[in-house]
Length: 183
Picture 1 (cartoon, rainbow, N blue to C red):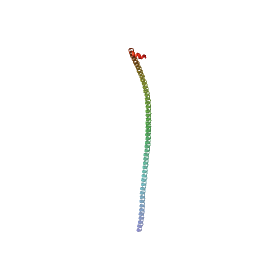
Picture 2 (tube, one colour; picture 1 turned 90 degrees about the horizontal axis):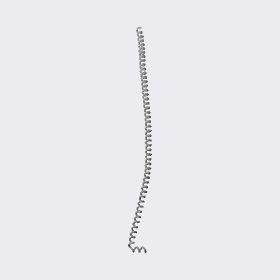
Picture 3 (cartoon, one colour; picture 1 turned 30 degrees about the vertical axis):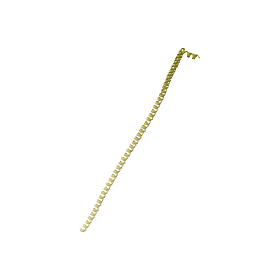
Picture 4 (cartoon, helix red, strand yellow; picture 1 turned 90 degrees about the vertical axis):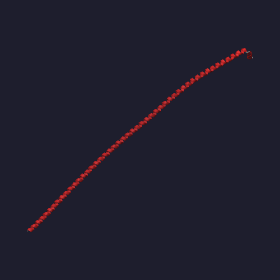
C-alpha cells in the first residue's frame, strides 16, 4: 500500500506539481500578460502623449505662423499706407511745384506786359520829346531862315542902295550918263 500511497502521492504531487506548475505557469503567464499589457498601455499612453505633444507643437507652430502672417499682413498694410501717403505727398508736392511754376510763369508774363507797356509809354514819350524837339528845331530853323532872309534882304537892300547911291553920285559927276538916262 505504500507503494500505492506512494504512487497516489506521487501522482497527487505530480498533479499538484503539475497543477502548481500549471498554476504557476498560469500565474506567470498572467503576470507576463499583465506586464505586456502594462507595457502596451505605457506605449499607448506614451504614444498618446507623443501625439498630444506633436499636436500641441503643430498647433503652436500654426499659431506662430498665423501670428507671423498677421504681422506680415499688418506690415504690408502699413507699407501700402505709407507708400500711399508718400505718393499722395509726392503728388501734392508735384501739384504744388506745378502750380508754383504756373504762378511764376504768369508773374513773368505780367512783368513782361508791364515792361512792354512801360517801353511803349517810354517810346511814346521819346516820340513826343522828339516831336517837340523837332518842332523846336523847326522853329529855330524857321527863325534862322527868317533872320537869314531878313539879313539877305537887308544886305540886298543896302547893296542896292549903295549901288544906287554910287550910281547917283557918278551920274551927277558924269553928264554922259545922265544924258543916256534921259534918252
